[in-house]
Image (cartoon, rainbow, N blue to C red; front, side, top):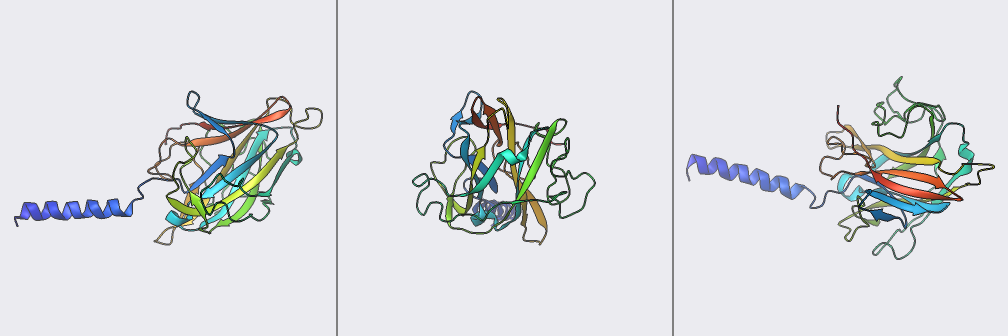
Length: 267
C-alpha cells in the first residue's frame, strides 16, 4: 500500500466514523409545537385559532442526554396582566403520536422569581415582568434577539424542570408534523388558556411569544445552552435547517397561534 493510499484510507475512515456518529436526521435538542396547528409554506408559519391550545415542549433526550433546568418564557405587551394566561399540565391528544405516544403528564410549571434564568450572574439578565428586558440563558447571556423582546414588551418565566425521560417518540417539527420519529425523548404538554375578553384581559391583536431553553452537559463536563429554534444558529443547532419561532396572537374573541420562521445574523 502506498503512503498516499494509506493517508487517503485513514481520512476516509475518519469521515466514515464521523458520519456514523452523526444522526441521520438532525433534530433540534429542544423544540416547541402547537398541537393542531397548520403550516403555511407561503408565510412559513404555523397557525392556530382559539383561546385554548396545547403547547408541546419536546426534548431529544435520546440523542443529547438530559436537558437541565428547562424554562418557558411568555412575552406580551406592557400593561397587560399575566394572570390572564393560564398554563397547566396536560398530555398530547391520543392518536397524534406513534406508540407509545405521550406517556406522562408533566408537573405543574413553576412561575420563576426574578431575576430568573441564569446560573451565572449577569447584569444583562432581565427580570420577570420588567419592560424592555431580555431573558437570560443559563450561562448568563441574553437570549438571542429575534424581534420579540425589547421596548414595550414584558415577560414571565416558568421552570419546567429537567427533561430526562426517553418514553416518547421525537421527530423534527420545523415545517411539518413529522412523518417519522427517529429518536426518543420527553414531551411536556401544557394546556394554555388566554382570557381574551377585551374588557378584562388581552385586547384583539395582542401578541404572546413563547421561548424554551436551557442546557445539556457535554462529554467534557461543560454545559452547553440549547433552545427551541427561533432562528438559524450554528452554535446551538449546528445541523438544523432554518428553524422557527413560536408566536401566539389574540385576534377577535380567540387566539391565533403561529409558529413563524425567523432569521438573524450571527455576530
